[in-house]
Amino acid sequence: MTIQADRWGIHPAQFWLRGEDPASPVRFDEETGIWNVYGYEEACAVLGDPKTFSSAHVNDLFPVEVDQSMREGNLLDLDPPDHRKLRNLVSKAFSGKVVADLEPRITALTHELLDRVDTDRFELVSDLAHPLPVIVIAELLGLPPDDRELFREWVDKMFAETNQFSLNDSKEKMEQDFAGAVEGFAPLREYLGAHIRARRADPRDDLISGLVRAEIDGERLNDNEVVNFTVVLLIAGHVTTTMLLGNTTLCLDAHPAQRDRVRADRSLVPVAIEESLRFLTPFAAVARATTTDVTVGGQHIPADQMLMMWLSAANRDARRFTDPHLFDATRDPNPHIGFGRGIHFCVGAPLARLEGRIAVNALLDRFPGLHVDPDQAPTFMPSPNMTGVKTLPLRVA
Ligand code: HEM
Image 1 (cartoon, rainbow, N blue to C red):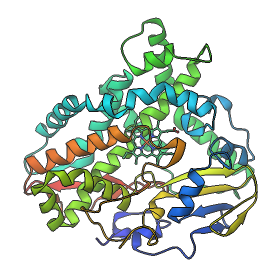
Image 2: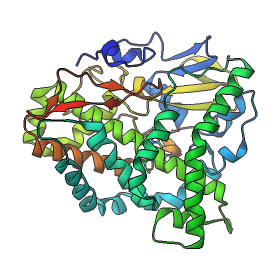
Image 3: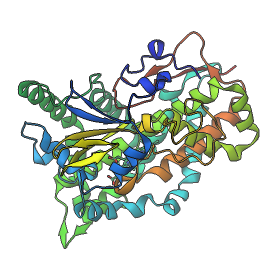
């Protein structure tokens, strides 16, 4: 598959999407002051050692005051032992068994959404890939699914940034960026705060009520912790899955013979979804900070350095994957790290996989002639840390 990087607006920093290999698996970037980890083995080593490579310490590396109220309760920002305590609060709600029970609801929703599309053309993201996961996660949390256009507006603003962040920016620029981020999150935080206060007064059978009631070491989470926890669940719970549905549709369209094979043998749908996660990894990069001197990929890295693990590049490491730049819908085994690795491994992976399987099957069933609109190119997410379709115009026949 030729990635039309320029035409589709794929971020230029993602050189592996143009089929290029990194000069070395770990490289210090003088411009940003950040260590880029591109190798598979090296990324796994970092993600498997949270003591040396901390999530919480990342924020300490910025020479600006980070408002603690933005951080408390954010699962992605925590290290052991706090991380485990908080993660235990939700891991059951997203376990394979609980998620499997959602299949009838997700199937009905998928068909409801597809019943509404035009008979000759539609835009996959607006009509299915965004509403499906956002409605599912909103229903689980206990938020009104009809507010999804609001979420889309707020989230689009949060991820509009096209520059890679840098530790070499001036203090003023960083302060401005942080203030911008705080401002960007404010409407969503206020909105969630109101729902959380309502659940404290009147609990229901939903995840927000569960978080409001939950206790860690005998203490309840405060409203702010529940807000931050819910922000992560709401955003992580749909943005990446939206990209997964769009990317998989795009990859199958680019490989008609593979698409026909998947259509004929539906046991290949989950296999094709894993390959899509490897080939176009939605959550392209995760950050960690060193707590001590360490060697990674033969490079000596001092303490208090920031590392970006490019999952999207590691998933194309020729030392781990045969023909890494080839989309192969039958690739099995496929040990990609598109959901991360180690203690922060995506809690929502079973849900994302289920939504992917249901949506791809429904598209294959209902639209035998479905193809990417030759007159309207897809667009991609502008952020360098994401790899995914933002819009994907389709023709039904
Ligand atoms: C963590 C990817 C869907 C919730 C992660 C991480 C990755 C990831 C790479 C690890 C971050 C790190 O190591 O710092 C994805 C992809 C998805 C997806 C590619 C869809 C295709 C979901 C869904 C949910 C979710 C549906 C719904 C609840 C989370 C949460 C974490 C997480 C809460 C933090 C886990 C922790 O820190 O322990 N995800 N995710 N994700 N994901 Fe997902």
